[in-house]
Each structure stands twice: as C-alpha cells, then as structure tokens.
Length: 394
Ligand SMILES: [Zn+2]
Image (cartoon, rainbow, N blue to C red; front, side):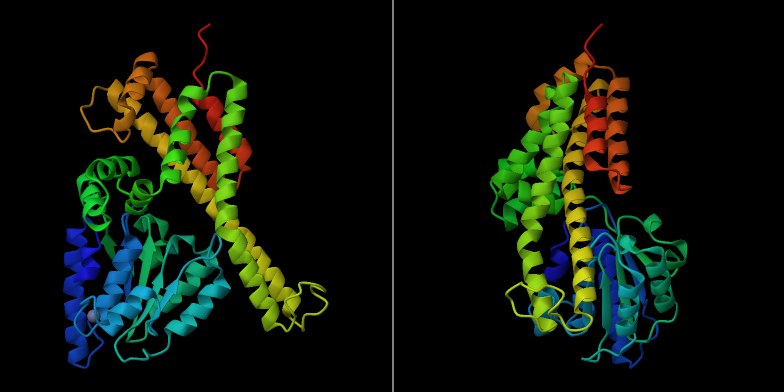
C-alpha cells in the first residue's frame, strides 16, 4: 500500500478510497462495471496532496492487487506511462473547450488492458465554462469502464452540475507534526529543520520539502518576510514591490526558457523546417504558422501562470506572518507559522493594533484577487506594500 502511504495525514480519505478500490475489483471480477462511481472529485487545500490521492486511487484501480506499489501497473501509473491513464494538466492558465473535447473523445474508448480507463484532471477548476460543459456531458453518460478523477481546491470551484455528479473525497491540511515526520523519515531532513519547514509551509507538503532541502528557497522566504519591517517610506514600498515582481519573473524564466526552445524546435521539425531557425513562417508547410502561433500563445500563458504562482507563494508567506501577529495580539497561545521570528512578530503585535493587522491582511488578499483578475502585477503589488506600511506618527 505504498501509494496510499504517501498521503500524509489523510487517513479518512484513504479508508474511503481503499474501500472503493475493493468494491471496484469485485465488480470487475463479477464481470460488471456497474456499481462503480464514474466521477470523483478530490478536494483539499493546495499542497494537501489532491493529485497524489487521485494517482494512488488510479493505481489501486489498475493494479491486480489494488495498489501493491511494486507491480508493472503500479509502476506505470507512478511514472505516468500507463496506457489507460490520461493525466491532464492545464498547460496555460486554463483548459480550453477544444482541449477538453479531445479528452472526452479519448475517455470514450475502452481500456486497453481491460480494467478501467482513467482520466485524471489536475486543477479541474481551471476549466473554462465551455470546457466544463464539455466535461459535464462526458460525466453524465460515462462509458461503463471509464473513471473521471477531478482535482480542485474545493467543491465550490466546480460548477454545481459537475459537482453533483461526483463523489467528493475531501483531503484535509496535514498537521505540522505529520509533515515534519514525513520530512524526517522519508527525506532524511534533520528534526529541527523538518519542524521549521513544516511550520513555515502551513501543511503544504511540497513547499515544506522545498524549504527543507533548498537553501535558495529559504533565502527567498527570508527576503519576503523582511518586507514588513522595511516599509517606512513610500519609496521603500515601491522598491519592495519591484523586488517581489522581479523574483517571480525570474522564476518563470528559469522554468520556461529551455522548455520553450525544445517545444518550438520540435514543432518546426514536425512542419518540415530545419533547425536553423531562419525563414520562420515562410519555410513552414501549410498550417505550420498557425500551429507555431498557437504554441507561442500557450507558452506565454504558461509563463504567466508560473509567475503568478510564484508571487502567490510570497503573498501567502506574508499572510501567515500577519496572522501570527494577530494571534499574538489576541493572546492566542498557539504555535506560530513564524516561530523562528517570534521576537519580530511580538514587536509588531505591540506596536500596532488588531485593526491594523486585519487591514494589512485584507490588503494582501485583495492583491491576490487582483492578480488572479489579470491586474498588472507591479500595480497590484505596489498597492499592497503601500497598505502594509507603518504610518509615521503625526
Ligand atoms: Zn500493483
């Protein structure tokens, strides 16, 4: 059961999935597909392991031994090469209707190896309205051996017509102890570091692991958390905003530059142009220019998404900082996410009011909303840093 063992602090969800996998195996043994739930919705906060839970469930449906973790089927599911699992991630900011219709068509086929055909949608909440409607049709009348696994932060992120046809599996935020334990036992992280990273990541396992293992990631967090105390003048606010935006742009560049080049070269080869890169568009066979343009649009949208995600991590670190300040102001005796800078948190708690803290927190949340709504990042972040500033006493 090594797949389900990867899910930290999710005992309830694991029990539900194991029971469902056993029932599915029985249905198959009886030669029936009936009784199987064909649409599942995995929900939980970012980092709680939604897609890992879906993957574990896929393995348990396709493995003759309900997810043993070491047979061919399990291995293929794990590395993403199983012929009956289609793993769908949005390349850009959203799934298009065309992309979704192609998948629906694919999902209509019978499984190659005779068990189930699994369509696993990561970030299903990123489906456009037209894409969601295409998906809905597929879920309404599923072929007997097709299972849709959708992942989204919460059930409310899916249109109600889809949600009502899915069985919902809810993952919870794992505790600090559970995350620290996994870092220490599986990744060999020293106990102190594991505890620090687990607290700082607030239950996001992937983020905790990166914090524990990568010094650069820790340095960036330090940078972000130095912002609250650096904002005395308007100039400081603008500089801090510029730095935040610049870092996220660098993240996006680092993640995409090489990938873009490979994709573009591949596409040119397909359309019969040499790799010289000259005579772009002219030398391409019919349709090539359109395909190239489509690829460029996707690449741009992907860079925007990575930039936005990177900025969002910084904003969430800031939210956690002010939440800690508020907890101290209210005298709550809890473990802080920023236990490592308790001194600083307490100083700010004394020198400001809970109203100040709430106002600052909502400025950060508003910034996140604006970024999601495509507001220019520099403008949105500047408005936030200005709101975080400690006003000089009159
Ligand atoms: Zn197996």
